[in-house]
Length: 116
Image (cartoon, rainbow, N blue to C red; front, side):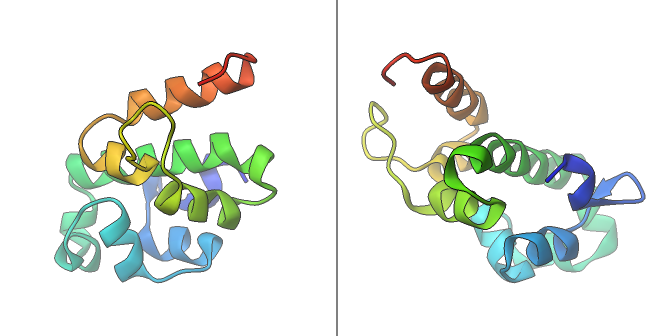
């Protein structure tokens, strides 16, 4: 999947993300650490914070998808797999804490053949 598959009109849209990842809009909101209101109201979806959180999750899912086999499987990994060296935190936990860059670096180290 490309990042464009998750967008409509230049914005990340919870409906498209949920459809691609085979989940619900409410689940997407919980996954990125936002309330239901943030993804239910168009003006809130356009907010920079909401768009940043959605983008970070999508970037990480797209980075993980080739090794997981699909975007849906990468999404499951993102939500549930504790990462070595991060005190049992999942990629989702790290993104919610503002550390999406740590997850991207973790995946880059694995791709480079370095034990993460």
